[in-house]
Length: 451
Image 1 (cartoon, rainbow, N blue to C red):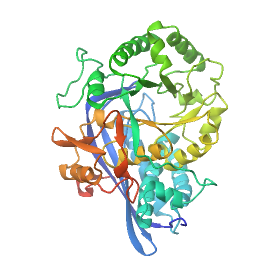
Image 2: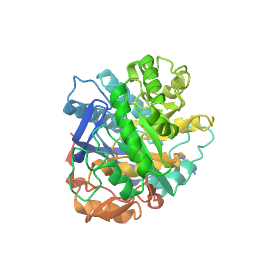
Image 3: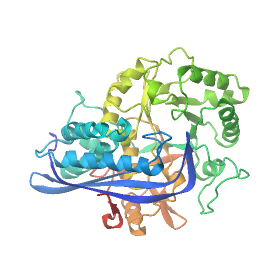
Image 4: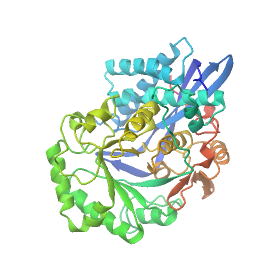
């Protein structure tokens, strides 16, 4: 099958307020509420009208971690990125394949955003959401699911020999342990008493978890103490567990990172946890991460990039400096993930991880999960279900529509649909529907328009 060519007539942008049930602290930021962005594209394929949709949380202090900016200023940066992407896509008059449209309009939008002083990571946000929505429309027009559509070349085929996506049925959930998370019942902190787990040990017992992502603060004493406490819980309840460590750009240079790893390595209480550590994610600030080599630091696990992935050459630049892989996140672009997966598949020493931007129930978590799992990622960080109660502020009818359209991926607990985590896994069978991982759509009238 050849690529679907489509002409986008209209791009509609929306947002919905999201309140977290638990505070999510990563790096220097603590998030308790923020908007979720939604994109709806109205397009034409061979004279036929088609629609596509996507969504992504507008997380503050990740795309731009400048301490001088407020959370609201971070949100407005992402709205600006969305507006620039909408303008570029709607200005494209000819019918193009989804990938060709991304290359033409997406790159133009990023250039505009950078000129307007947005960091490249924020500049990519709008085009990434447009890419997902356009892909959804093209796949629906072709009557193909994500995996089948990519194999058939529906999106265009920029990877030479077509990338060999897998058709996943399940994926292991890697549970996030944020810096403000309570570990045990006796810990002080938030407890919404909403029938959902509020501590690490309660989450393990409820969901049968065995893979975990541990946030670091970049301060040796504090990190050693907290990791030691986490290790005690995991040794008691986690079975044959595995962990990843997330530096969230908290180290200013390679020297400080080397000292940090040496401190972990020489702490006896952390020996078992380090043996079970699969990777260390983006420890260095992006300003220096692709300038300083980490090859001689003696870090005993693969170190991968995340926030530094703001341009096409990031992975190859990182490999030359001692990194061994990169993350897949739909907020950085589906074609970036596909391109990086194609590169990594050529070298068994490299790895592609699946990380979360607090993807919310519905479009965001479904599309991001299927993207990563189809690229061969076997465990993926998911945290939206832990920090937000199900579908949050979405209308009850919308939540039920998604749950009914994707049985097995959601379950009803405490009277509301929630992500279904069983034995630490997610069931992906119901995501293989025509379109990009979704057989339901938001209630557009319930959302606030982004002008």
